Length: 273
Image (cartoon, rainbow, N blue to C red; front, side, top):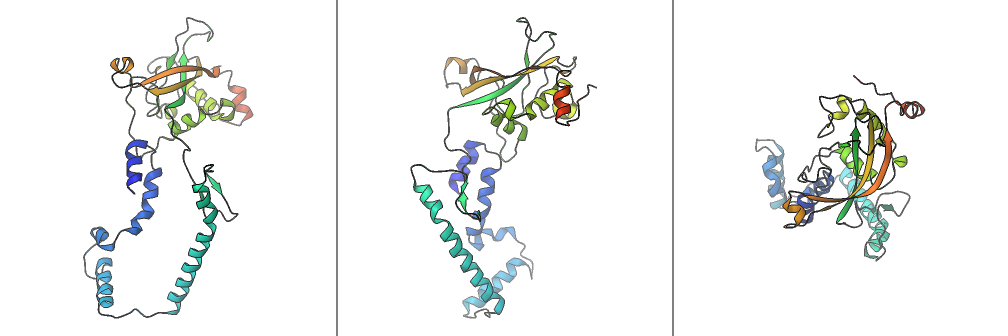
């Protein structure tokens, strides 16, 4: 369980590692968990103490029919799990380990891994808006939307959220691995930002157009992020991140131009307040 605690402290993977800790609670001795239960007479702790006292006196609980059935079922399931786990263990020891795979149609046991390797860089989609009537105008000023947790502003300290989970930030990170055609919801999000929908803006950390007219255009830019080096030039400027532009993620879109896109997918067309 110690490795999970280290991952919670360093990995910031929301509730994933907390869930893996829960089954390990059954491995603790009853005495170590006794503080969780009431000491009142007739309570769980009192009944356990009575059972332990009877066992210490050599009194064995009656071996009823139901208990026999339960033991047979438990042993049978244990043997089945052990048999089905053989290819999983072999895969674990293999130099060509396969992740997130089931090796039998029952899917009772499988291999799981959130990430095959940990990298020093990450790609991010940055949403930008402009009030310029022409998005291709070199003089157009593009302002960035910041999310509540994912990297964006280079000077913002990385957040610590575990066990909370910012699902939109998480989806934005995964969208950066693919294209916007594979993640049409991000265009849906852009339309809602163009309309300045309050519910959508509540999911954002900042709205660069707050108190002003909504943006006329929104685009997605693709960047590669990595941490600044402690004591380095960027860190001296107060920057936690260094980023390099990869290219455009999706082209500039406006609300009117998205109307058919929404209609084709039967999505409610966002209306500006």
